[in-house]
Image 1: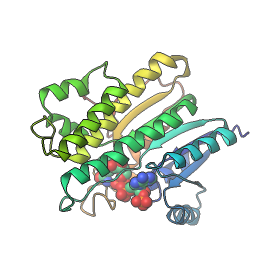
Image 2: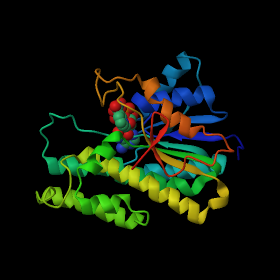
Image 3: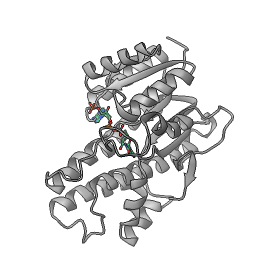
Length: 276
Ligand code: NAP
């Protein structure tokens, strides 16, 4: 078993994830895994970094597929006895003008952004070693979507005692409510992506609390962040940041020094803790 520190970035064959891997290859003192659901796209991305003189390793990972997540988990357990840095970056968004029915958009978006990310956490968080870092890439849209929720939902999403099961129930209810076209009446905002990212931010707050309760002595720091508005296939060419700039906050959180006792359980943008 290798004692080399190891970092894993989900959805990193392109966009912000790719830029995070690039930065980690330069700054992280260990093995950096670029992961992709499609091995062809993943290996092509690794080769692109190789041309820049950077050495990333590849492992397949489709966060929608529990078997794929578990295969990565078993690989990390066997080869490294765990992992040191996990960046949950993989995500999807329908384009604004997409005509796919809203209920379908809700189900598909939540499936990857919330439930897929949660499944990765369920399988990989127990493997994170002491002084490890976990970064969940959310979005400022989670804050604006929170503002668009009913007061009752806002209270639940800001609660310091909400459990993961309760959050899963709420995310499931959103999808069900869209199918019955009652989501607005039930206090939800009209954005599937926004609700999925509320899920990611709140999940991060819950996971950080659980780490405090169950693994306090391990000094693991777990946070959610927004990369900013970044020129990728998701956000388009008009966005203000380059992918390397978008990677800055996630990389800052992934590389917090071992003597740092925070941030933890926070939501950050531009390396600054934001009020949730
Ligand atoms: P992107 O260019 O569309 O890249 C998304 C990445 O996620 C791709 O590598 C994609 O793989 C991967 N992915 C999607 N579904 C996956 C799955 N089921 N399993 C594994 N990988 C999967 O988007 P981006 O702009 O870099 O976004 C990265 C993250 O930042 C997302 O979580 C996004 O919500 C967040 N974000 C972006 C912005 C922005 O302005 N760009 C702003 C706020 C937050 P494929 O190539 O196979 O599709």
